[in-house]
Image 1 (tube, rainbow, N blue to C red):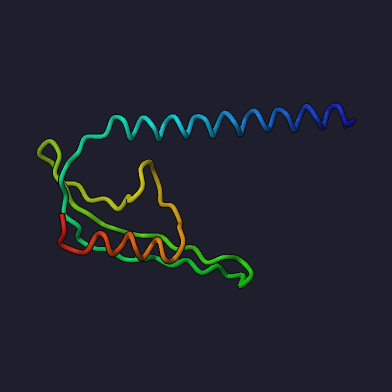
Image 2 (cartoon, rainbow, N blue to C red):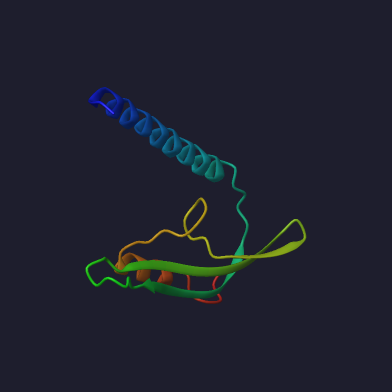
Length: 107
């Protein structure tokens, strides 16, 4: 494959990744804008530490706040701290700060 072909492949990959990033951003913004405030109760709060097998890789810290709430007559449990889906790692100090904000039993 010549350099023109490689350039086309790289541009196509860039467009795909930019499109995916844009989609995820729009999806997260929609989740924030369409959210309904509901009071829940924290049932557990801790910092989850993910130590990689390779000591040269960085350790990841995840604030895990499990809370229970009711919506439309049904009870739900979740542990999303950040908007959107999935967990996000953060610094050790920020993860500890988030966990302190949400002590067990607090609304």
